[in-house]
Length: 612
Ligand SMILES: C[S@@+](CC[C@H](N)C(=O)[O-])C[C@H]1O[C@@H](n2cnc3c(N)ncnc32)[C@H](O)[C@@H]1O
Image (tube, rainbow, N blue to C red; front, side, top):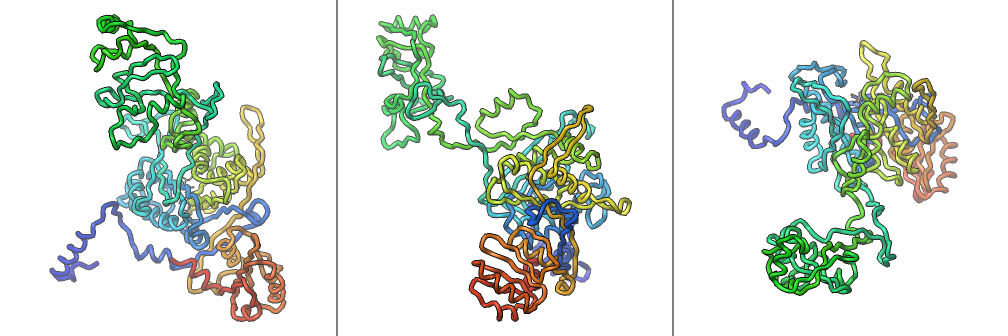
């Protein structure tokens, strides 16, 4: 803006307006007009490359080659509100020329280094947000360099949706990279979710529970009957208890009172959240110490001297109130406990901990943590990802893939094996996420599906580089077909696992001429993804294309002909609902006037779905 043309009053008004609007949060240089243009100036179409795809059609999974900004614009048209998990590992902006943006690189010390990266991420995250289901979640991997900025950016794009940050250990060794004698060994996974999302946690396995006395109420464990409060803090929970069968009395520990209230101590109108001690005794849930050593003191003097010489039951102290109560009472020395039944666990699930354990942790340490109340996920170091990719590819052409175990663990916790959950990774790199999805499906017979976007990473210096084709595709293909690798002079074979993918490439065309430039194949691909989420290739030998699912069908009629319309008329009667996409819907409607048949015009339909 040319401020020199503004009057004093206009400048004051402008300043006032700006001051009142200053938002809390992140500020970076951005050009909104350029952003709008980038979003809407052209239309993205995709084509299937059958020779690079894997498995038989219809394909459930997609591997998309190209810039993820374009891919996301396309996915917004075809998968809006349908994605369960977005799991991305963007360039960490370490200053090592690690991200491609409008084909320009930003220098390490460039003042705009953060702004350029933030704008790059902002545009992509805004689009990604639209893909998420109501119970969808996005995981974003990030290192220390951009952790702070990214958190604020995520808050801006996903306001109120933050659910936490995972921390994991990325390596076993150490190095003082920052010159401050600090080894930065961790990375983060930021986690934002829509309202209906929840992690699976873990069912508390009642493994420690047993039923040695055949209790009708099922397996139980022995629980602590006391809690960490003193008699001064909780005087109402400090009282004696008696075993009704043996008549033995047990004094309360003044430093750790009973965890259950006594009916005798409940104040009028007081509501209790748990059972009373009397109920527990009545329900035979107290585990009284067996074969007890006992004591009984006939006078206060005798009792005091036993307390002082340490021979009395330990919970008795000379300064407790009502000491004379214990004179003449037959007492036990042991600690009563109580039966905790597995069937009564308040929550059968352990929540997920944000602390990710390294796979290299000692087994004992893990076992100890497992018995805690949270579920820990376990991940290998970055080296795990590198070693695995090298085995699958037999080369080191891609640096720093994520450890498969990390991605698998996150997906296992955020998806289910039924219902066709869709998982998107638009910074796919070597397609670790696709690999993780297939492995999880193989383990729990799941039907999860993946959409991976991977760039070529080609530059003017390396115009033929194609990470998507040569790394991501080869990796996924090898995993699907099975592969072998050499280690220590031996050959190891890894079995094939079920999976497929369609390999898609991107082309762009001016929005106003979509109708002239888009190919029938590209139309058919987009229509199928919008309507069915699965992909049949385009068959040039047919007059019209059909994708069937359940008792519904989607039909595409590239050119109107009497023969095609007659054939379609015979076919539609088999389905309860059919959508027919045509360039001349008027003519088709006249000939296909069946209930359940809708005829829609191309290309307005696509352009409308594509736009904001
Ligand atoms: C940190 S790596 C992801 C590695 C991946 N998680 C794995 O396990 O292989 C980031 C990837 O994002 C890719 N990338 C960067 N800019 C991109 C863009 N505009 N569109 C698509 N991919 C992009 C880079 O090529 C790189 O492969």
